[in-house]
Length: 280
Image (cartoon, one colour):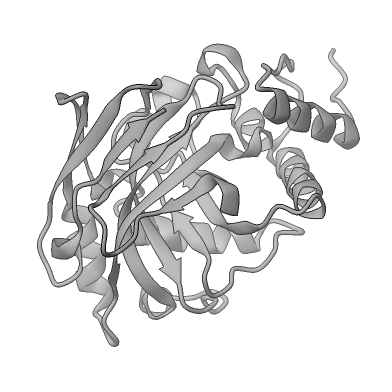
């Protein structure tokens, strides 16, 4: 039987893999379970904050049930988004950006919907209370990566590997109007249709309902889960939360251009725009 690596060793391994873009070679028992994995991720987060990095929100992964069998992960996970991994498209600029893949291992692109908070959601909040705590919604791309070769890992390993987060590009933000109906917003985002293109070739199609029945529902699940994880910092105004990929995650490399086309209706969802990203 393999003995799980103690927490300091796990933290050192993850930090070294990130800083040097090196693979991890843990056995399946390291870390042994999700609580140990989140303890590792939070310790890595604390070390990064101590080194001067600034957390700006969270990513929620594996909310798309259609891809669970491909990766062997059958429940959502989450990790930290950092100021130096986040790119916000200027509201006055085209909905496009150039993003570097430097330092990432086996990067893949995920088209997602992203929320920005204006306040901390209350404990045991309803969908309506959650919507009241949200300032805006946007379409974005998360660039995920893994230090486990070939994208082969357990759920606990994915969590410990900082939730597989690499970069986050957030497109034009659409403000939620005061008193917006949470039910109507949830349905409109669930019904949203998306096409993903790589170098002008259609690669995949998805919809909002793929992520735990809808992005707002996925956000509610995350708000409940994060509070159940010991030692997790509270959500706060200004935090950015990306809610999971609407399609499969596709390999990317420098020199490529990817873009999306969206089809949605409603006063908020209907204002979301397709997004373009070029990698260098």
